[in-house]
Length: 398
Image 1: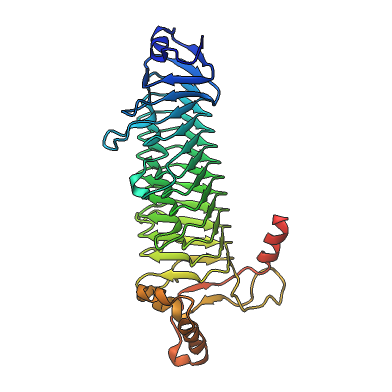
Image 2: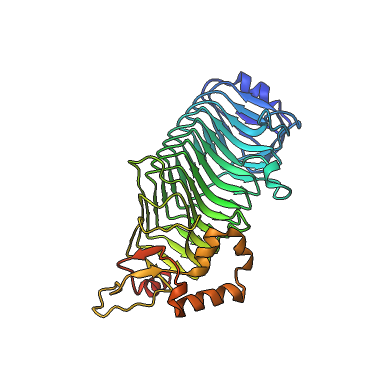
C-alpha cells in the first residue's frame, strides 16, 4: 500500500492486513500513531512523521513489525512519561535507517526480545545541560537484541539497563554524557564502536560477563571525564581498544566485586590521558597484559595512596621504561617499576591535581630520584615489560 503525503496514517494502519507493507511517499504525516498489528512501515528520509508536541510519536505494540527509512520529527517533552520518537514494547521488531529529530527520547526499547536497531540517526539538542536531555537509545529489560551502525549525537545517554545478551556493534556516540551506560546487564558485547567527545565513553555498573573489543574511546574530558568507568562489575574482557586523550582512561571502583570474578585488559592502547588507569579498591583479580602506555601524565594512580602490586601486569609497553633488552626477545631484561612521588601524592591528596603541569610536582619527581630518603612507594611492577611495541604499532597503522 502506497500512502501520499497528508494521508491519515493511523487509519491506514488500522485497516492494513497483518503482515502488510505501507510505503510512504515524500512529505509530511501526522502523528502520533500506534502500530497494533504486524506491519512494515517504510519511507524515504524525506517522508516525515510529525509529533503534535505531546506524548510518544510512534508506539510499536505488535510483534514482528518494522520501521524503515523515514524521519520522525519530535515528541512530547515530558521525562516522567518517557515521551519518545519511537517506543517499542514488542518482540522481533526492526527499526532501520530511521532519523530522529527534536525528540525528548529517541528510540526507547522496553521489555522486548530480539529487537534490531540498525543504521539509525538520533540527533539530540546538542546544547544545554546534558542532564536535561533525553536518552538517544534506551534498552530496558531487553534481551537477545542488537544495536548496530547507529549515530547518536548530542543526547544524554545510550542506556542498557536490566538488559542481557545484547550486541552493540559499530555505533558512533558523540557529544553526549554517557556513550553507553550499563547497569545490571550481563553477557553483552560492545565491539567496533566510536565514543568521541562525551563525558564518559562507557560506564559499566553491577554487570558481569561484558566484552569490549576494538572500540575507540577518545576525548572524554573535564573533571569527570573517563573513557571507561567500571563499578562493582566482573568477568569483563577489555581487548584491543584505544583510549585516547581522556581525563581518565579507565576508572575502576570496587571491581570486581565478587570473589570468583576476574577482569582482563589485553592489547589496549592508552595515549595522551591525564591518568591512564585510576583504581579505587580494585587492586586484586585484575590483569593487564600486552597493553601500550604512551604520553600519559600518569600511567597509574591508586586512590587513597595504595598500590597495584597485586594486579597481574605482564608484557605491557611503557614509554617511560628505562630498561634494556640484551637478549633481543622483545621484553625488558629488568622489570618496569612505577615509582613517582607526584602521582603518589596526587592519589593521596586529589586537590594537588590543581598543580598538575606545574614545575613544583616535576621537581618533586626529580628530587625523589636523587635522594633515597624521599623515594616514593612502588605502585606497579611489570616483570616482563614489552620493548619495541611502539615501532610495531606505528608500522601496523600504516
